[in-house]
Image (cartoon, rainbow, N blue to C red; front, side, top):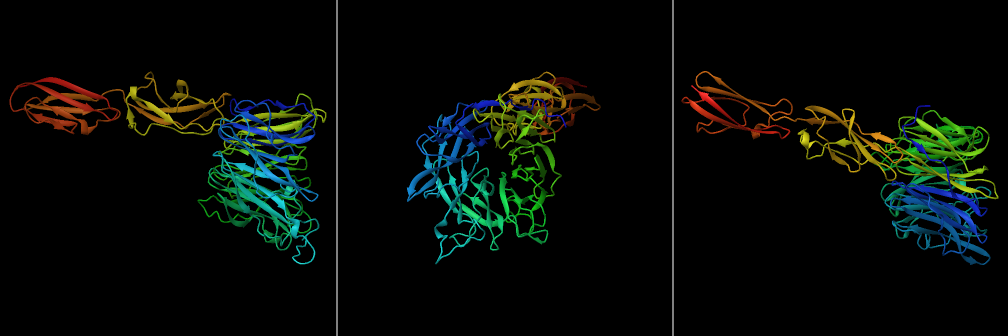
Amino acid sequence: MAPAPSGAVIQPATTIAGPDTSILSVDGVAMAGDGTGGVVFRKLVDGVPHVFVSRFLRDHWAEPQRVDVDRPFTATMPTIAAAEGGRLLVVWATPVRTVGTEVRYNLVSSFLGEGATGFGPTIEVDGNDIGDGTAAFPSLAMSDNGNAYVAYRVVTNDLLLSGINVARPMRPGDQLVDVRVARFNGLTWSSVGTVNRVKGGSITMRKPTAENAPAVAADATNGGIVTWQEPGIDGVARIWSRRLFNRSPGVVLPVSGDTLDGKPVTVDADAPAVAINRIDGAQVAYRLAGGTGSPLGTPYVLRAGLPSSDQSGTAFAAPSPIEGGAGLGVPDVAIDATGGYRVTYVLGGQARTVGGADTGPIGPPAALGASTGRQVPQSINPDGGGVTAWPSVDDAGRPVTAVRQVFPGGAWQQATLSSPISGPVTDVRVGSSPLGDGLIAALQGPTDGPRIMGSLADSPPGAFSAFKPETAPDWVRRNRARLAWDAAPKAGLGVYYDLAVDGTKVLTRQYRTSARLPYRGLGDGVHQVQVIAVDRNGQQTASAPAELQVDTNAPTLTATRASGRRLRVRIADRFSGVTRDSTRVSFGDGTAEVRKRTSIVHRYKKPGRYRVTARVRDEAGNLINRRTKVTIR
C-alpha cells in the first residue's frame, strides 16, 4: 500500500443517535461542497415511523431533529440531499387520503434553508397521489446552488383490466408504472413529467423494488440526468436514460441495448446507478442477469459512458462488461471532473472496485475487503480520489463499517468504524461532497439498542494555482513582491496558507489569497515560490511552483571621456533590463536631452565643466536620478 498523504483523516466513529430500540433505519447521507450535510433516518414516535435528520456542521453532528412534525402519519422511503450554506432537502412518502379501502400516499418534502435551524413545513412534490406508496423508491440529487431533482415511480394499474383497453402483463407480476421526475428550485416543486418511453399504460414494467428503482443525478447548474429500467417491445427489461434541462427532459437514450458484442441479450438489466460531472459527462452502471439469454453467462456488472457536452453527448457508448459471478450485488458509480469513473459493487462476499477514463477501457477490478452487504457506496473527487464504505468484519470477526480513502496519486488508507457495543452493521451510507470528502453513517448494534454511527473521511485541500497578480510586471522590486493564488478547493472551513520561497517557508498562516513577500531572502534573480494549503487536520496540498523575478538594484550608469571632447555614456541593468522609454540624459551644455537610448556618445563644442543628469528606470521599477560633473578639455 502506498503511504497516504500526511495528515489524511478518517475520523473515529461517533454516536449520532441511540442506543434506541425505536430506530428503524438509516436511509441516506448527503454532503455539500462546503462541508455541511446531514443523515436522514426513521424512528418510531408513539409507534408510528417518522423522519429525523442530524445535521453535520463542518466538524460535528448536531442533535437529531424531527422533520415531519406537521405530518402525523407513517413516513416511508426518506432520502436527503445537501447544498452549500447548510441547506438540506428531505423527500419521503406519507399517506394523504383514503379511496375506498385503499390508503393513498403522496411524495412530500421539507427544506432547511441557509441560516435556518429547523426544517420548514412539508410541501407536496407531486400534485397527484402516488398510489399505495410501495413503488416510489425516490432518488434525490441537489447541486450546490440548491436546484434539485427527484425521480420516483407510481403504479397506475387502473388500466390493468380485462375487456376493452386491455394492458396485459408482459411477464408475471408486471405492473403499469410511471417513472416521474420533479424539480425543486429552492422554494417550490415543478413537474418535469413522466419520462419513461411508453406512457398511457400500453406496456407493463417489472414490479417496483429497491433494486430496480430509477436513479437521478444533478449537475453543477440547473440540469441533470435520470436513468431507469423499462422493458422493450420484446418484454426484456433494459436500462434507459434522459438528460434533464430545467423542467424539460431530453430525448430517450438507450443505455443497455438489445445486443452485446453482436450477441442478442434476452435477460433483464436492473439496478441502474448514474453520475454526472460539471461538464455534463455521465456514467451509468447496471447489472445484467445471468443464465440463458445472456452472452456473459453469469450475472454481470456493466458500465456505459455519455460524453460531455463539448463532445457529441447524444448517445451512450456501447456497454462495457466489468465483472460477474455468483453473489453479485448492486453497483454504484461515480465520475470525476474529466470523465474518469469508479464503479463499486459486491461480488461473492467481497467489496470490489474498478475505474477508468471517460469512455476508455476499463482497468482491472480490485478487491477492497470482505463485505456483508450488497452495495458499496462511494464518493469521488475532481482529481480521481474518493471514499468507499461497506459493512464488513474485523480480524476478530466482529461487525464493523470498513472505509477506504483513496488519493489522486493512487495512495490509500483504510479504517474500520464500530459502535461501542458490537452488533450487526446495516444501512451503510456515504454522502459525497463535490471534492471527494465523504460523510459516512451506518446502523449498528443489537435490536434492543441499535445506534446510528457517523464519521467523516476528510480529503486534503484540492489542487490550486499560484500566480503573480495580473497588474504585476514581469520583474518586481523586492518591496513590491506580491503573490496571489486560487482558493484551494476544500469541504469545510479552516484552510490557511503557508508560502515558501526556494523551498524555505517565509510566511505562515495566511488566510487571504494574496500576500506581499518579506524582503529577507529575496535576492536578485528568479525565485521559485509555492503556496501550501493546510486544513484543520493538518492535511497539505502544495501549488505548482510559480516563478517570481526579483530585481532589487537600480540600473547603472557609466560616463567615460573619449578623444575629441567626447563623452561616452552607457546605461545597463543586470537583471530586469532598462526601460528604454523612461531613459533621459541631459549633458548640461544646452543641447536637447537624449531619450530612449542606453548607449550615447556626446561631443561638446568647447572645453569646460558640465553637469550630466540622467533619469533611468528598469523593468522592475527601480529608478536612478544621477547628476555627475565632468571636465572636458
